[in-house]
Image 1: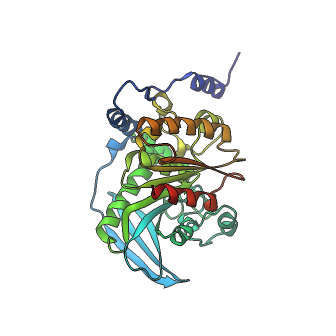
Image 2: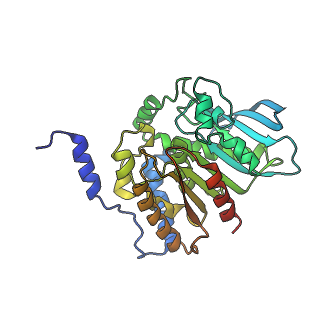
Image 3: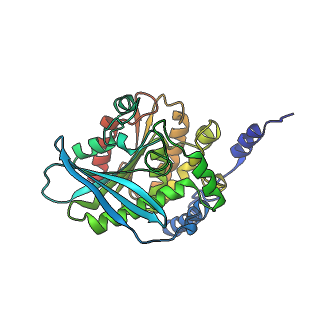
Length: 338
């Protein structure tokens, strides 16, 4: 006899066949829109309302050969987010945007290569997590968004504080992933409204690792203004990752597995460029689950009519749960050029 509900849930999850897996029985564009409607309902996107996008630049400085702009933006009535733009000190025209999303850490300053708290230097150095710094080196204008529950948006110097806002969000009929999608879309609106002279969405990329990779992947489903997406250490079967292992509650979408496994979501991303990054020895998102998911992703891209090697790619780093900049960036830039 089993008295453990977790064991029951794992068994039930293993038996579920996602309702929205593409079978080829309907036109793919029609299926894509149907999936987006269903995912939006699962996330609770109908609970969001546009507000006055109160915008303020609080800092614009040049140092270490780069230009750093900080601004705040109201994305929902009564809620503001922090954003940092990093650019080369000299530029001759708008650069393609790269939105950088940190995972569970002390905050978005990690993306800027800034160590504010004990342990930050090791976090940056040990996992290529200075996303914005590297994006500038790759020819992009970087924008680091402070995600809800992290850093200056609810976190502490000890790390993120996702649990309470994630649980209260559920009472409102939404989830934290939905809030992170919404904030990113409103930040893109601000880029188009205020920074078109220095940033362009043509050839733009959204990327992140771990919790930032999860956000990136869901953003890709519903926000189509980016040309490419690079989720790292996040894309895996639900069964092998957030069901099998303990994860932060911000990773969970109520009822999602009844409709989609993670690979099925790629039907909403194709034909835009997608580079899935993982670590060969990542214990949190195991390689077997990543490869199974990527096989479904490839099927989605083929169904969308994307030639092999032109839409998606899998990058496997020689290590654990971290970003692999030297491996991933050349693949993304090659796809963007096709």
